[in-house]
Image 1 (cartoon, rainbow, N blue to C red):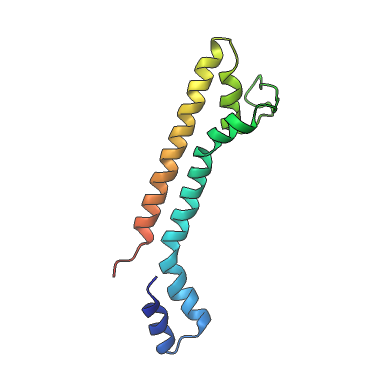
Image 2 (image 1 turned 120 degrees about the vertical axis):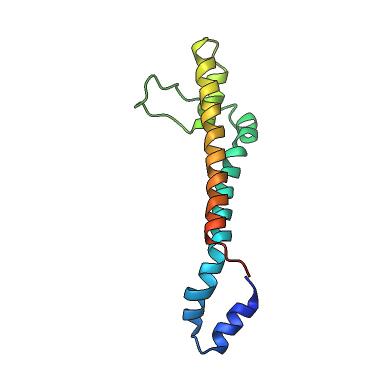
Length: 121
């Protein structure tokens, strides 16, 4: 956000609180939303190296149904990829596709929200 916006609002007699609420936050919102969404997407993408390094000693049972307790999806992909049964190849592939679609949706949401809230000067 350009500092001239804050200086102009303060120069016109707005209080600091009014400047923050009416000028700073609306102008900073696209960057904050984009950063939060891209941060979540990056955390999703960074799970693969952590799984390969830190998940060697982690043991969890594979859920037998949709309502059984389970762990996060990257861990499930890791666990399913080690199982020799043919059915887990499809489950692993499906989970990877779900993760990729989620990543694409998160990035598209970041772009849409940024374009919606961004103000041109």
